[in-house]
Structure formats: structure tokens, C-alpha cells
Amino acid sequence: MNLVDQIRRAATKRIIYTAHAVDEMNAEDELISVEEVRQVVFNGEIIEDYPEDKRGHSCLMFAMPDTKRPVHIVCAPKEEYLAIITAYIPSLEKWQEDFKKRRKK
Image (cartoon, rainbow, N blue to C red):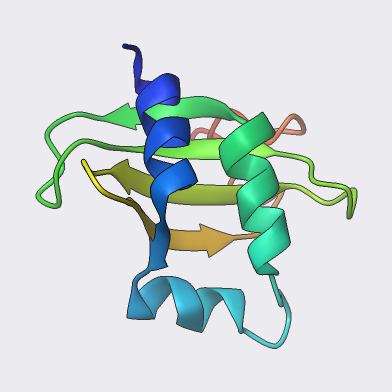
């Protein structure tokens, strides 16, 4: 089973949010909804893979939910749930126009 399948399978069981993810989602200039996160999980694509992450294998996913704004999430699939580590609106300062590749520093 590939990583996207693992993520979606874990998410169908349960999605949990770290305190950091909740803080980022509730930032005044972002206000990312649970529904937007779900749309990234179930319709998005992996743009960076972090197999050696200290929290376990995680990755950065991207999608343009129904809200028509780009959303990035970092998530880690577990056996019984999907952990949302963070969620944010990517900026053009750090990301190329497609929001899939980081700008060179």
C-alpha cells in the first residue's frame, strides 16, 4: 500500500489534530476549516515526503479545496488514525506559483 493510500485509510478511521495544528488552523489570517483539511487528505497530493520524521513517517500534502485557496498539511498515518501535525496557507514568498515547490533561498 502506498503512502497516499495509508493516509486515506487512516483518515477514514479517525483524524486527530495536534495542538500546533489547531493553533495554526485558528490563526486569524488563516482560519482553516476541518473540511478544508479533509479535502486535502482525500483529494490532495504529496509534495514532500519525510520518512525519517521523529513523529514517524509523515509528509506534506497540498490541494486547492472548494474554498479555492491553497492549503498545505503535514500529516502522519498511524494504524488507528491520521495525525494532522500542522496546516497552513502557503505563501508565494516561500513557494513557487503552483505551491508545490519551495523557492530557492
